[in-house]
Length: 250
Image 1 (tube, rainbow, N blue to C red):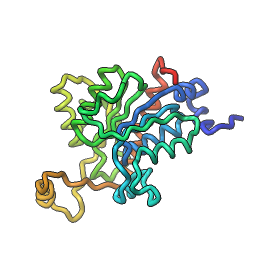
Image 2: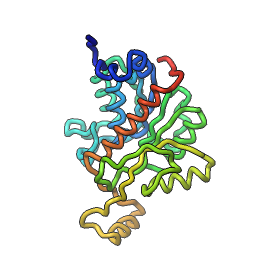
Image 3: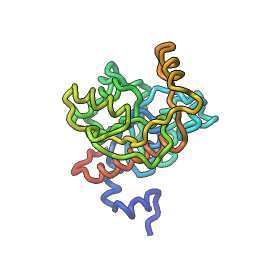
Image 4: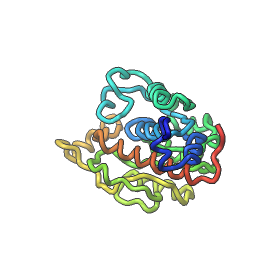
């Protein structure tokens, strides 16, 4: 009888499959509501090396949805807390932390050729585009998270090419911007649910708040939608890693 932390996973993917995952290196950019659950699932799937990129510290408003957010972790860097948790799940893992806000200006800090897979779970359109361009230029597979805010249906997420997406406002913007740049395909996870209007907040209220200080209104969120998106992302990554012909050694 198998007796190790990933024994139940090995039943599904086999010994060779577990070796592939152990020899894989995945970079997760953005480890908040969505990305945190990506990290959790990849760690529990036996992925051997994880790069965690996030510049934020844990705040009290993260407690409703982010797996690394606890009262005991408030004020700490998300990446540091995530690393500790990954190593508590799998002490054999290698974890690299970068407390960086990924933008075109910081892209040169990363060598995308060293990754077997990249997960885009960041919020800004400019950052997402730069990340996608860097990964594709390096020939590294990437999957990108579309919008998970203002949603209530965790069962509405789909894996698709960006040009096959519908409904999602972020996906619409990304389709337009990627088309301008000649990017012809991109695997994404998106929701077919139309965004909810925040309770007690009219459309005119939202416009007024958006104009004020030139900042967007923070989207509504919950415990079950961002986490579902993250788990769908992680599932796609694990399955793709299983199908890759060659995985670099650690």
